[in-house]
Image (tube, rainbow, N blue to C red):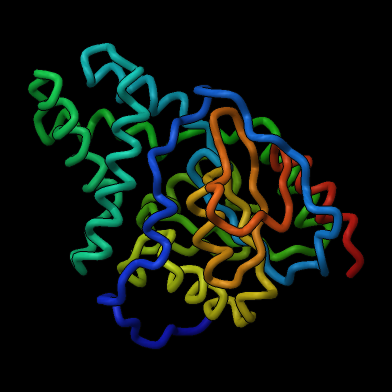
Length: 265
């Protein structure tokens, strides 16, 4: 790993259009899982999104829904607002911790529905995010990928401290060679700089890296930056139709791992 050159955080977010409102897992039909016929050469590094891609958000959905007066149907609206305002912070050159933005947007949504939610109550509602369980397919998939010699690195909008706690509490840290957080560059995904910066941190060209994510906006941003992509079509997740198609597409990480492990070294 090596230090990154200073970034011009005032550049317009070329990938902002990809952050259209997204539903949380469990809502809506899954995306189709037809993958491109040729996945291309074996990637040198696999970057892994964390929330929803690796970790199951059900405990967080329950906690946030309870804070919103027992209305879990409002949680997707909160998540969309969180993504929206993270990009507002990026475009406005005013980086804030993802968790801080999450609490602020949760209070905004609560106020819109006549719910009085204090800063402490909002922070308490978001506390489960640091101890989320992995999806059942994740650990066996990571085991297969590491045994096949892949270098696995998380790339998340969460803070450095947040993703450290998540990986340790989920038991997934053992499979990772590094953890990267956008906190270091002060820009949120899907800004193209984030993916190019991540590639530089591992000493590889962006074209030789692969991002795995269950978010169409994340896959779009990585593709626009020149990175190869793998979309996990978890329930309720869809690709952004205006973005390039992903390099790979799979129903879950275990299915994706089987394809990646089969690629020649």
